[in-house]
Length: 152
Image (cartoon, rainbow, N blue to C red; front, top):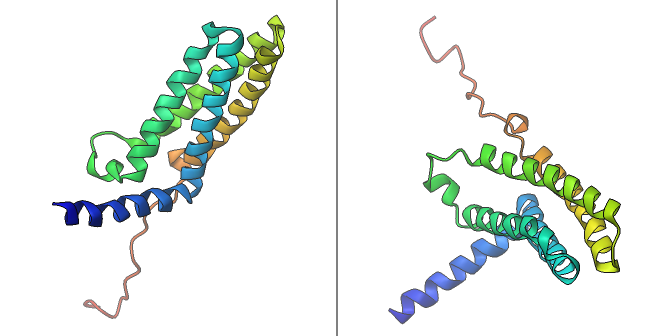
């Protein structure tokens, strides 16, 4: 039992580090960290705005685990590219609205920092939405066939 656990742990760690080095892994990790920092800033000033950061951090962590463990191939009834696209698009829009409201209200320094970081999060989530837009992704093309293989 201990041997199988020891052998599976490096595989899990390798999968985590391999996915973390991809563009999608870096984006999701940056989203999680940025949401955490925004959550801390909002908690220090106005806890009413912190729910957006909590929800987006949890959703980004879920998608990170799903992509890291290759669950998106094992759960085919969910369209993962479109789900991820709508998650990031909605997050970008909500962060933009929240940041504008927070910056217009003016408050203490942590509230202003949270508003500016929210604008940065808007750019990050917007870029992630642009990158994950399913229509932009290359489609599988059929392999070329040689006409000499079949009847003429």
